[in-house]
Length: 448
Image 1 (cartoon, one colour):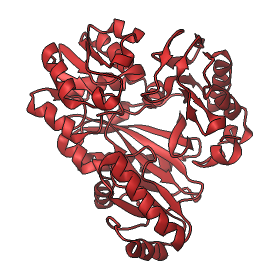
Image 2 (cartoon, one colour):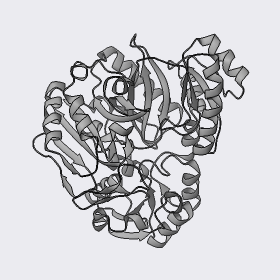
Image 3 (tube, one colour):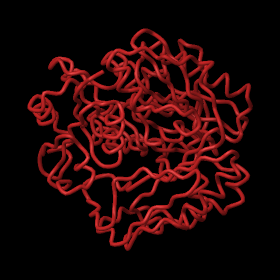
Image 4 (tube, one colour):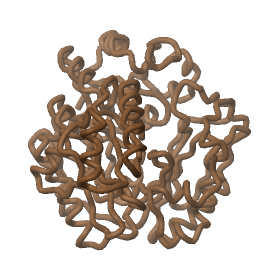
């Protein structure tokens, strides 16, 4: 095991990694920007290093500064967390050239799976079901229209690089497709420095289901079951749960086996999430692979009892998975609500400011992952998530009841948050009966 690592991230995930390090006896070096200088969680790190001013480009995305901090602190490895540089193959290459272990997959696996088009090609080789669409990138209006007319409208344009809903557009006819193509290419270029896009059949009212996998450096890959992430706004998740309430055992087995095949074919080690959409006929189709730990990883931890962050550290240090697929058991039902400093009534506009009031819930079956506290200043420079509320109970109905109670206890203000929206969701009969899809929130709840 490593003796000292650097955490190239901030906020809740940085704190989560610090705690995992403490339990493994590993020293944690936390970097921070000027905006995060007074963040309370930094006091729990063994060492802290400022890496620049508030803008992420000058701090958390600045590879030379992070590597310099790692060299000054004399660390053996870097954990990228999620977001920022977590899926940046160039960063992983720089770490390797500096003889610093990247706590994540190999550069080669990241490159195979980092492009959605390349990942689709790999899934096709593994005989994993795919959504009908273009076989490769689409550059011109003529190509786009030809593909769309072949597979039928509606279609969705997707950026090959990146994620988070950027570079994505839905089109219902030739005219909207032509205008959407240019907009998607421009957004992809601005966000990812790569304007490559492709086209797929757009599934109306789908569910978004993903499978958590773990692999070690000896070729062993296992799954830790699935998460249902269908409650979204603008292609970004708000709530996740496991198990998926509409999957049969047979479908679950097929879905998880497909995810393992893709990871094995990529020579993958560390934690990854293989994502799928399920159409209204309950057929699943491969989407992409996220080559990092996910925001929603606590859901999987709660139902399996496995610590995914500790596994990332152990795998990176060269340890074998000492748990077999047969030994991974699923118990109960877990739900996670992302608590964001956003105003749903204004299109989920970020709400930076000071948390003059902040009190988290507790009690049986409740877990809160947060870096925030009373008096904490929410910066406008970073993601608006201030915490994650997770519950784990014996049944889905019990988990919903506990989540509703915990949301009633949660106090965060005066900034606007997603807590009231989550309360509405818990009380909604559609959600209680699992009659939701990726567009359900925007269709049924009064948001801007």
